[in-house]
Length: 382
Image (tube, rainbow, N blue to C red; front, side):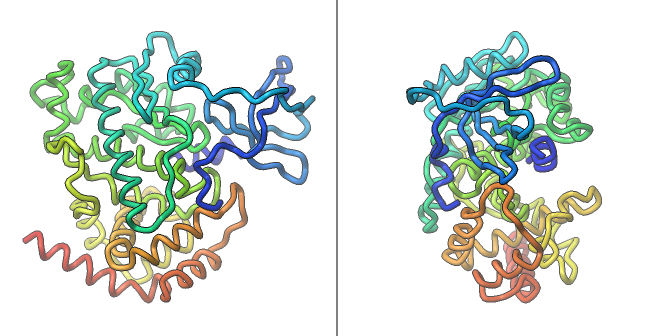
């Protein structure tokens, strides 16, 4: 997920999936060239008059107080846009050549084959159903996102990286897709043309080429796609709130927990929480005292290039342990996280205190139990 990019460029109870409570307003905003008009709802108003607003295309924007020339509520509420109207709004921002594929919960903008867009949308729809059902059964009051989820798919990696550089900077060439907190979109490219699949039969061959996405060579690529779509669901279903201090281990732990779809199954998942072999092996190989305390107390391990893969594996392991052994407590803990407001204060001490209040132990005290649980998972594979 584009944490650093979203927060850098932008620098709840379980009802965060509801539309913003404020009315739609019109702002005249000073720019270097000429004033521009912004229509949006206010998400957060700072004491100095600065505003975090949400535009109709779901994009967050920060309006600095000295740049706001005027502000007025719109005279009458407007009916919500249809999926296609929203899609056309997004298309207007994209390069020429993009088209739309619309489903019940998604608006997919693409300039690759329609077959690939349809395949992605079907995968995301299966994730949508599975994600909401799983967390409701766990006792968490998640809600269907109030707006359709926007996905942008480029035809090839070159076009994708050129676009993604605006969000990710130099990191654009290291990921095959990402979710951005400010735009609220998942952006990716047609994976059937990935260099990872260069030697697979059917590569890039339209509908027939989709078969390679079920091959072992494509597992990591598809997992990334599902991972980012899980972030999008979590931040729009009431589980997390955008730009709130959501611990990265929570967000990434949940995304890694869902990133193993069964592409041979028409429903996409035989069951949530199957062993994520890549994460399990990494966790056991990199385990050391204090590792869980570190990821709960702060997000820094996820941002250090040398530690990030280990941190993701630890987030998966801790999430798997808590979901499978303390599901009710974990759901209650997610409720605490969901209540956090955008830009709210946060500290290492507060994070550890909230964790201990939810589970009765500190992360350090739980470490032995998590290690034993992971060792049992590994033994069952033999």
